[in-house]
Amino acid sequence: MTTVYLNGRYVPKAEAMIPVEDRGFMFGDGIYEVVRLIHGRIFAWAGHAARMANGLTTLRIDRAGAESATLKAVCEKLVADNGLAGGEATVYLQVSRGAAPRTHHFPPTGTPTTVYASATLFTPNFALRDNGAKGITFADIRWARCDLKTVNLLGPVMARQAALEAGAYEALFHRDGMFTEGAATNAFFVLNGVLRTYPLSNYILPGITRVEIVQLIHELGLPFDERPVALAELAIIEEVFVCGTTTDVQPLVEIDGKPVGNGRPGALTVQLKEALAKRLYGT
Ligand SMILES: Cc1ncc(COP(=O)(O)O)c(C=O)c1O
Image (cartoon, rainbow, N blue to C red; front, side, top):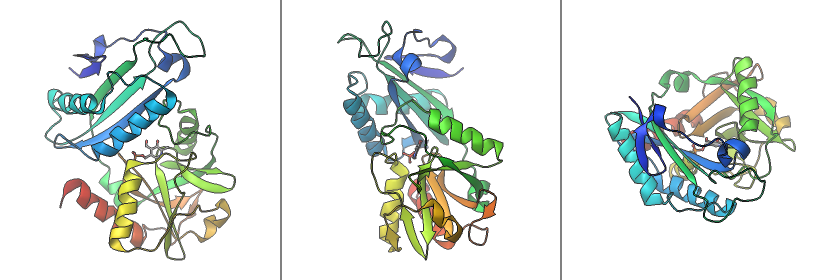
């Protein structure tokens, strides 16, 4: 039996109920987070907590009940109670603006938020990371606050479905002729031997894994230019990888049916994949 967390209580998943007027359901009016736990320990909690706090503050959602210390304890307890502390797990956290009769503007002050969390067994796909995966390009149809991790995910939903139908793993968004990020990942490219990625702005999510990768690039002294790559440069891209909490460093070896570089994961990608694994597993 799976135990989940809902509004201060640990309950069997089948008994976790939210009202149909929840604004997360009606408007996508909420934020979420996905954290990774290895042997019961959360990886990079501070970054996840800060991103959540920033999302709640920016969207003016009450932070009561979603304080960093509370949520950290919830993650650790869910993983322990569901028997997942011995290996790898993810915890999904969601905070919505709560339930109230449907109005576009905010509900009355004091309307309690809905705070939900659940833990799941996580098995990284090491073979895919070693061999590389396929990608597609997809117009970035998302709104202009992609820096907030909101539960409005129709852009990524449409993009990932297109990827699936094309037999690909990830869709790379492009906006104004520039690659922004993956549907649920940040994207790094190598051109002329230099690593490039879209700079932090309202058009990409500030990924927690992206922070780790940028730190590793500096630590390893790799050539890096935080500058967007144009869709028109696709044919001269030497390496591509996407990264995220559940993606680690995932090479893309084919985009829109054409090989990237020599069609194998590139040297810089492999170096960063191994360096990130060391940070995750300490080996
Ligand atoms: C659009 C988008 N970009 C990037 C990421 C990667 O972020 P993180 O490394 O924090 O998991 C995600 C994760 O879900 C995402 O949805």
